Image 1 (cartoon, helix red, strand yellow):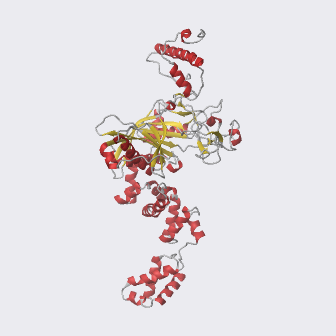
Image 2: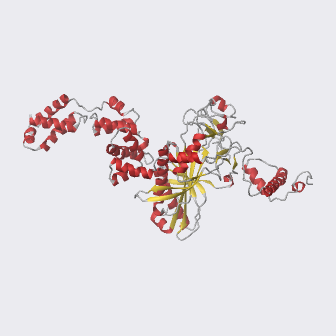
Image 3: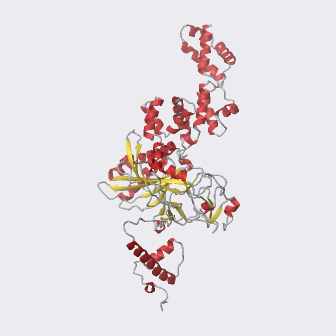
Amino acid sequence: MPDPRRGPNRLGAMSEITREQVEHLAGLARIALTPDEIEKLTGELGHIVDSIAKVQEVAGQDVPATSHPIPLSNVFRDDVVGETLTQEQALAGAPEHDGSRFKVSAILGEEQ
Amino acid sequence: MAARPELMDYDKALEMFEPVVGFEVHVELSTKTKMFSDAPNEFGGEPNTNITPVDLGLPGSLPVVNGQAVKYAISLGLALGCSIAPTSRFARKNYFYPDLAKNYQISQSDEPIAFEGSVEVEMPDGTLFTVPVERAHMEEDAGKLTHVGGSTGRIQGAEYSLVDYNRAGVPLVEIVTHPIIGAEHLAPELGAAYVETIRDIVRGLGISEAKMERGNLRCDANISLRPRGQEKLGTRTETKNVNSFRAVERAIRYEIQRQAAILAAGGSITQETRHWHEDTGRTSAGRPKSDADDYRYFPEPDLLPVEPSLELIDELRAALPESPAVMRTRLKAEWGFTDLEFQDVKNAGLLGEIVETVSAGSSPQAARKWWTGEIARLANAAGPEVEASSLVTPQQVAELITLIDSGELTDRLARQVLEGVIAGEGSPSEVVEKRGLKVVSDDGALIAAIDDALAAQPDVLAKIRDGKVQAAGAVIGAVMKAMKGQADAARVRELVLERAQA
């Protein structure tokens, strides 16, 4: 029995977000989702996309795209050296280290 | 061990296919601090000491843009003939790899600070080639990973990586070209010349050390082939780890030959990252392009847009130094080099070294002679990837030349001093001291040696008096031998001739 509290129908989503897309996103974000969660998120993400589409309809050509809610720009820092962490402080949160460097499990791959 | 891939003869490959290349060049800016934190822009020392919470992406930390880095990026954009964006934004490039602790790199995506320019590149034959630049954008460098544990993998689970984040957050500008068409059989040479031109531009601007061997300047070379007459671009590969101008050239030539062999045999090229191996002169397959390349860029919410004023842009434009092409014309005239001499210096990538050697007090001709002669020879002998500029500094060369000019060293002794300097024995003066290589300038000692030589060859003086000046050669040779080469042959000759006239 499908749970009536979740799923696309309850949210009335009309978007084209598919299960496959959610699985793909979860994979990219390294999040393990259960089949139930995938189903729920497929609906919720669809709903979010629909909501944004509605906002886009309202915003006319005269409204520029924005990435930040505060109308500020050009906030710069002077090129002056400040305080740094000590090596001990830097490594304090590391699950593993060799005394000077962070230790991570072997990475099969390359730098990006 | 993979079988050696088949390569097509280069000329045949060019007959069948048209090469298209493109470059992504990363330039590390030499600001005092990092791109988004006030940690020192220094790495290579004690690991994980030049970092702040921002560089580790610790919770609650906030990046703030380094204003100087923005100015450097604008200057570089202008020098590349780019338009400067009235508004540009930073974006998060999301990927999971521990070279950055945040799991994203702050970069610029669809709103780079500089876009659409071009670079005039001088080819080895002196002609100019225009490389179209798509964009130059700001981003942060990543940390350094050291992989521990052999590839043998005998001990299960023993392999791991160690991460030093000192380099994480160092300001970078990435310069991306459009696909470059038309270089034809000179595509490899164009690659090397392009990267060298970028090096000259950033050095001229004084915004980067720009040493390839130190990774201040890094090049990824995109290469594809298309059959003659075909409009559509072929599938490209992206070759990384090309750490010298020569490597850029060799890697492009190799990829052209490799891809041509595959295509001619009816195969297809895999779109992938490839790694250049300097020792074998080959590339090997790296990571194929995949889902993981879906970086899900989105505007960096912690940073505000960069909106440089027209006044700032004009100010930076006015402060631009002369372009490398203009500078070359000027230097050639100032130095009085012949076309051939100048071309040799340029092709050897030694213009900058000679500029610095001359400004450290040497004559242009002496600087040219040493850099393109003995130093280049020693670099060659040290291996194909060794650049002359990595062996000695211009200041050391200038000091060496000063010692020669003042008569303290002969060319022969200077070569020994040079070896000592390269071996890390100190400055030229220190090597002279330690190795006892000073020229015997004590005329008394020279005259004594001349007298000994004349005693052994009593007829020489008479011959000289008869006008056979070349007879002095035998005496000079004997004196130089007695002095173990540590005498100025010209001075010995003078003394011998004086003796004959006495």
